[in-house]
Length: 511
Ligand code: GAP
Image (cartoon, rainbow, N blue to C red):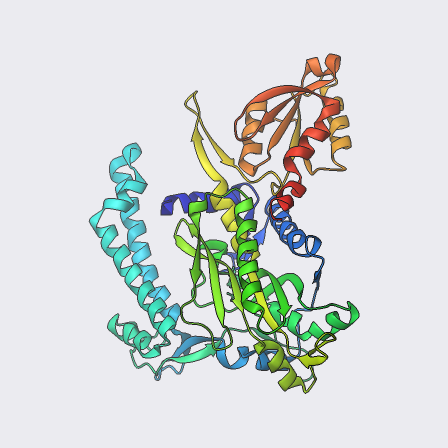
């Protein structure tokens, strides 16, 4: 998929009410997004599919909804206060502090503007014959500037991965980047800056600084004892949670891929020490099935085993998806040993263990974690399902071929005309179906235009009420992907929809 396809996807998400830039009327807030009327439904359905697959399908997994605010010691114990950082640099003349990566990104912006200028020149020179995609792929000036952008991206990534902050400073000097205030290149060393956002818990106590959680997992760890005891849970058992997390990200780009405020769906599975690899493989398999059940091209997914493990992990793998900009992590599965519970026991002074009645002994359970970003999964679903088709009559249509169980609306109820009692009959059908399915009612514009709009938001079925319906009590049902139409009795509609759009069928593929 090309860069242009990704741009089309972003534009489609906005045009059809899936994703908007946050606070757009005030020129937006970088790397923060809002979900519109259709996006919120798709997101809710993905979340529900994940939740049901975890909590409803496993007798030994229960849910939790922990608060975003947590005691500051949580983040000391988890290692985030000391180890969750971004690079900062100061200018010695202006005494101003900058994020080193942002200085570099702003520098890259110059090249992007140059590319934009060249595109505009090309367009005014070639008029209607101008092919932007081809121009971007072949024009030597554009390619040179793209190369410079990529070079900076690669150095940032490689140096951060290697923890080599001197290389980032060298790059700033190499590119001759100056402080916007003093105009000099008199830079300090690059130092680490924490990614967690903080706020004040109390209006009167300046000391009471607390963090917005950068992951939901810690809410599960600190509630391990509460849930285990009140739920009388026996090992192995899991606690699942979905919710917002916040990170002051270094490279916040690529739409909803890397956001400052995002949502995670995490499950911590507590097991006996020594059994963790068996469960790690089980969850690797389960989560893979979950992703594949949604019908994506299998070639678009791959596992990426971590070679360099975090000090507390004894196995880790990423489930990656091939986005238009390459393979990127969507979900992580980590065998986290007893690190988290052990650290919370140490920092809280509480005994956080499990009593095994069979072995008559206490021990700290090991944890296997599955952690997926809801927004990234949303992007997977959109990227996988978006296509522009050329029709036999020469027109094109944009389709979101989303799995019917995840589609924002399951059926659109469309009276062919706005008279002769057709709207009344369509409303009656709508009022019956809406108890079981989210349906969309629409009577404005030609039927063709209405079909196109439903294709674009991924509605799997359009139900058209025409004059024959009044006589025969039947309707035309049109399938989004094949565009095939067939006549069915109104009394059969509910059963047909149930067969096709039910989440149960998806859940059954997991066992
Ligand atoms: N508790 C483990 C944990 O948080 P992570 O790899 O940092 O691990 C898990 O995050 C998932 O959360 C990622 O695989 C990704 O899908 C999502 N994620 C992380 N940072 C994100 C961001 N800034 N924007 C959107 N999603 C993000």
